[in-house]
Image 1: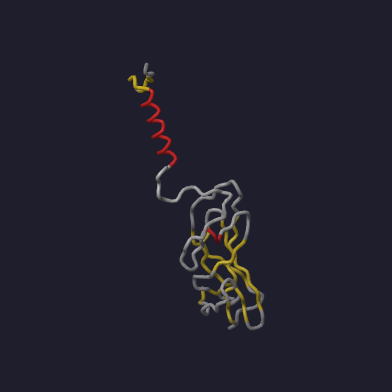
Image 2: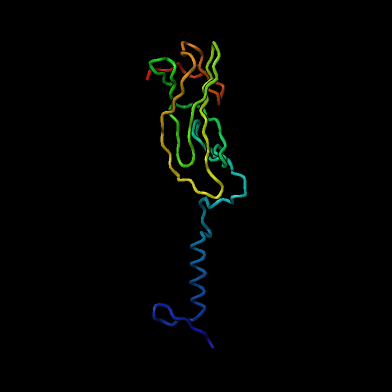
Length: 160
């Protein structure tokens, strides 16, 4: 004797209901989906290619860690020749800041990205460009400007 189940007011063989449930489970779990799925949170992040100066997933470690990012935008100086400003990409759980190390002949400017992502929480997938500034102890006054992340010399800053 075949068992039946009722769906939308119609009697269907029980096997049909199970088939529909199995199909729904496959669709909802994305079986056969070739795109990226949800990563195992315990697995280490896999490196992903990105353009130079563009933060990548591997550049944003969880747990409040700070990473250095190459300065891609031109550096601008303020009228006082002590304020340096660059554009930085922030968003989600990431914030940017500039730090400096000064000598008589050189200023090393480092763009740091802090990831405030807490394990088990979700960060919004948004990004925005923001101007980030730092004030030098003494005017730049022709000193060499070095990117702290790459060690490369930066172009002479323009006035902002």
